[in-house]
Image (cartoon, rainbow, N blue to C red; front, top):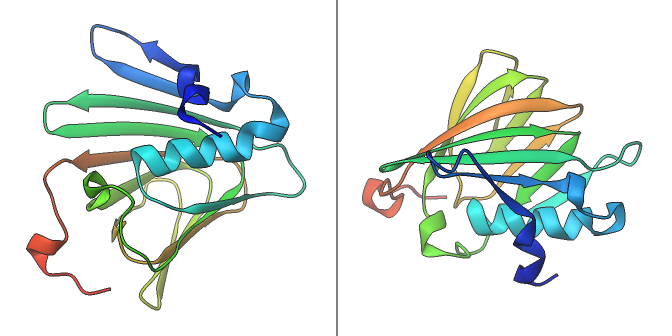
Length: 157
């Protein structure tokens, strides 16, 4: 899938600069590749797997606020895996905070795991190998501070 397929970016409230990405405008057979490309470009280089019993669906809105970026994500069941390799883009060298609004969210990293339920939050290093598994529909918020770099914090994966 090439980047022209990302033309399904829709501005949301142009006064605030929000961008919306949605699988709704993408043919079901193309959604996996399109969504992976969006996630890899905006967050981290990951592999994605969707539930065999349902159609992949995700709505993602990104709101930039100065040095902060807030993402809201509503998704069908999905699993993501960051394999042990270098960040795809330098801008992906960051920590992510996840605040779960609805659903269940399992995060595994460095031999540890956390199961989030609505109202819970966690932080993880997006450059290190990790797995995320959401067995059902979920909604999450991801605030990200640009400039927070893992190499400055000397994190070892």
